[in-house]
Length: 140
Image (cartoon, rainbow, N blue to C red):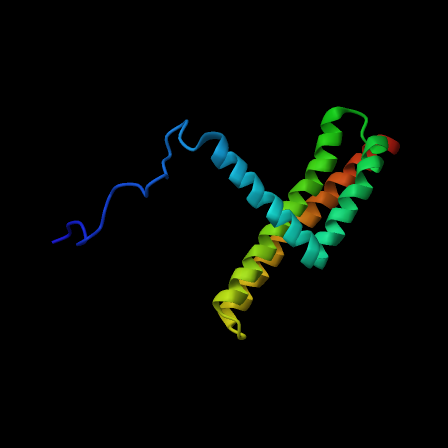
């Protein structure tokens, strides 16, 4: 017989709801504080995030000269934002893996390798966007 588990409740946790208007600006403010904390932590402790953030800052003025319209500029800078997002997620996965299973474990290694491969794909995408934009702007 598959009925509800004893003691299980189907009510949402108090204060949590998916309905619009519940939580409002306070929830958004708290989420933004969490985001800022993530940026601070990543930039303070992760070499790859520091390097990619520095590349993003350096790319900003270069992108203005490479882009001949707003859409190309959005693609150039958006590719770096996507790269940073992938790196933050990779870092989160690595830290969670290290927390759950600190000693060497093959399944954890594979999980970390998969996350790293995701970052590599975004690096390849960013490189392609920049190369194509430079070719289009200066050689076509």
